[in-house]
Image (cartoon, rainbow, N blue to C red; front, side):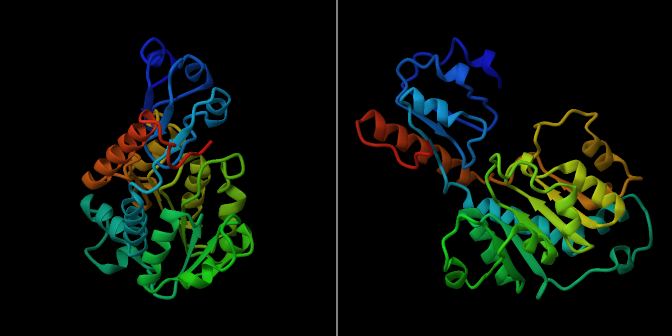
Length: 296
């Protein structure tokens, strides 16, 4: 939903609860005359303008803990579905291509001992890392903002640089926020550093990953699969190259790419937590207490 749909409907709000599909720009925020809090119902807040809200004296909060397990579960589910050849084999057999035989997905590798790279060791990244560790994977992370010692306390390895992480990751899961620093950080040159036959999963923010670079890497065979829950433009247009390749049975992405509609966060419990936690924060502020989880 864009600016024009909001203008004329939100000016007298005492508080706003905003979902990821709402673009809360400076032009909209400047029309708020009595707003005491903006709650971004979710973790990321790249669809709002927290800096401008701050200049207007409006605190902005997110809900960092509503769907931690759910997103981490989805990331690991995508990773396992791709790494074990489940999606590939199912897709090919459904259209009667190839033999009813394990060789449909050759070669596959045992997950135990494979290097699982985690970009961003926040709440969700940590939850995903611990799940991968429980499966016997060798988990290494890159996050320059995590204090020293976190790797020791969790039993993980820490990469000294982004490049060091990429060069060793057979499976790579993205869990960082979208910032100027992370925008399209996984581009052609970054993906080329991954071992041949790697898998990428993104349940964070669409613009962190250049999906056309992912598509090119699948076409070349450098990537054997990708799980994408988030895109830069949602929903994508029908003529989007990624979408066209994914829908084309003749394209390798048809069997090797999993697309979801920004749904990694979703469970009934997660939705309830999001609404309750957001509403409780609004109630705190309207009763005169300071807000929780302020991001600006």
